[in-house]
Structures are given as structure tokens and as C-alpha cells.
Length: 311
Image (cartoon, helix red, strand yellow):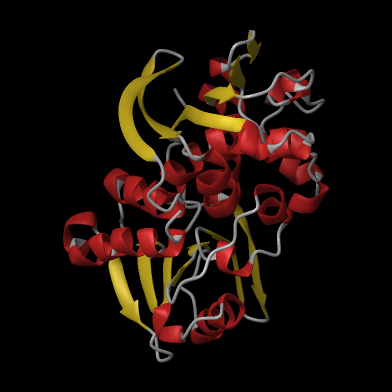
């Protein structure tokens, strides 16, 4: 397979070429790295969120939007489909790079992770990337600094001039769109955590509603996680049967039925203290090739409507 950082850079170029139309703002850092504000101070919209999801999945997923309903109210939904789920979702889209500095905090996702390859996903999938470019999407309330860019360049093994950092806050339209786009990723990640071989997942397709934007980051965290846990629906085509498919969905967890904001507060706002079962889609169909089809879980539109502040 071609380098996923090279395929992603073509989409980054699209964001740079159409920055005005997308309402995103590029910044050249002193280190010669490029930051792109998708939703910190900029007002990137749904189309910007779709493009960033394509960047996060390195161009290996089809990302579309449609209007459906949550408890009778029309809402935009994001749908993601990929025939390369192990690489596109686990080795690229997953938010697995913690960026912690004395004066900066963020969470990185995207193909630059595959240049480092320190997370378990890469060993399990057997994929590592080599490229002169590194694209890391950063979820943060602040635009990245040169310290962040140089850190990414150092670990990824590229020059700072080859580093691209599209950045957005959770509490932004792009934050809501990219969070909804994680429904299939979380299903495949849950399978990985349960011991299922990620390369046996042949196709992943899923959708979730776009949560209404709030600039309160804690509230935004609650809404965007609820969008997937109570509104996310996923279809997986897999090569091998297993008895653990019922554990992929959020309904399998003891915390099911509670808004994420409540769970987060009880964990003292520490993600590491939240049970992994919370981070899962609401409903999953698992279609075993030449075998049975399983349907597990259920959505909860009433809880979603409450979380979304729907009147």
C-alpha cells in the first residue's frame, strides 16, 4: 500500500487551496511546520469536518453527510465507509497520540502515528509508514506551537517543514463532525481490545449524528461521546466468526444509560479512569462472510435529545 502520509498530504493540499471556502486558516510556524486552524479560532463548517475526517483516515474512507432525525428533530449525520478498516481507522484515524507539554495539551490522530508506530495497533495490524511528510490532526483548544511541531517531526523522523497540523477544538463544528465519524473506528477498536484480529475486519461502515456545538469543552466532550454511544450505528463485514461480537456495543457496558458528562465527572475528568466499554457505538451489525449475521445493541434517542439540549 502507498504511504498513508503521502495520500493524506493530497487532502491537506486541498484544505490549503480552498482555505477561504472552507473557513479554515493556515499558519506558518517559525519551525517551517504548517498549522491549519479548522476550529479553534476559525469557523470551519461541516464540509471542513468532512475533509478533516478524510485526512484523518488518509484518503482510505468515503465520508458523506445526510440529514436524519434524533427524537423527531432533523439533524445532520456523518457516515464513514472503508474497505481498509485496520489501516484507515486504527493506524490512522484513532486518536492515540497524547501531546502534553508544560503550556500545551492536545490529542493527535491521523497518519503521522504510523510513522512512529509505538501503539499496539501497529504491531497487530503489521503496518508502519515511511514518508517525508507527517500529518497529525490535533484536538486542542489552542493552536500548536513550534515545540509541538518539532516534537512531532522528531518522533516521526521528518523535517519540521514536512509537518502539517490541522487543529480543532472539541467544541466546534469540525469537532462534532469528526467525533461522529468515529463510530466505525470505535467498533473496530473494541474488537481489537477483545482480542479479535483487526485484519479479519474486511469492511466497516457507520454513522452517527453531529452533536450541536457548545464552546464549553466539557459539555462538548459529553455531547460528542453520547452521539456515538447512543446514536452510532455500524456495519462490519468480517472474515471469521467469534463469540464476543456482543461486547462491541456500548449497551454491553455497565455505564450504559448514563450521559457521558456524568460518567466523566465521576471519573474526576480523567479519561484513563473511564471504562473502555463507554467508547463504543450504540448498535452494530456483524456480517460474517459465509456465516451468520449478528445484530447487537440499540440506540437511545431520548437520552441523545437530552444530551443535545433538544427542546
